[in-house]
Image (cartoon, rainbow, N blue to C red; front, top):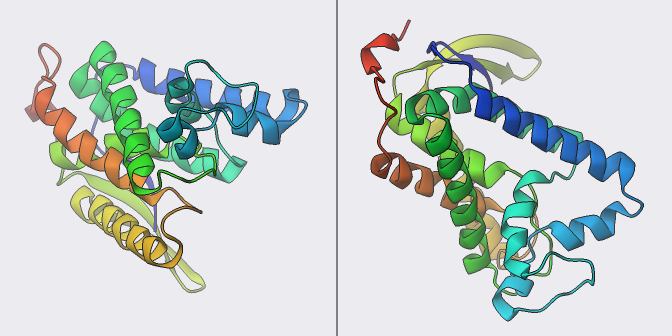
Length: 233
């Protein structure tokens, strides 16, 4: 199941969402094509839970203080597919959350969601020495906010039935509800098998999603925002 677009109009150009997509893409391009040793780059600027909890540097070329990797890791990706998937979700759901919050509050919301997501993974795997990279945690916060704000929004989604592929319109509560359920059970499965130290940072996704729900309740909408103008078609 792959969401492609929603049907909620926005009155303003989602400038911050566009900038975030461009920034993530440019950093990935730099990481892949401009860096002499991409692996060292990932270890230097990715978030390593062990470094955060122990306050030590495992490689020499790292930001100082080490806690800055919580932010730098949010703009790095492990592959083009990783980048594409994250940016697709950010484009589909980020523009409406940005429209609701306004540009400045959306930046604050995005960064805080990413920070809480990273801390969630650090809490689960405090001794892991595997770098965590990607915007998934921050984008999970966007998904949590979108679900709370627009649960009935129709999402055009690509559904795979074996060899058959169909486009269907599904409510956001179903699309995003299934997404977070998958994250939760995948996280529990990995936790039981490998103590959450390796693989996908499932608990960063969960932490970001929950942070997004909490933050969207605390942050007021932008001035003159009108829910009735966002018609569900």
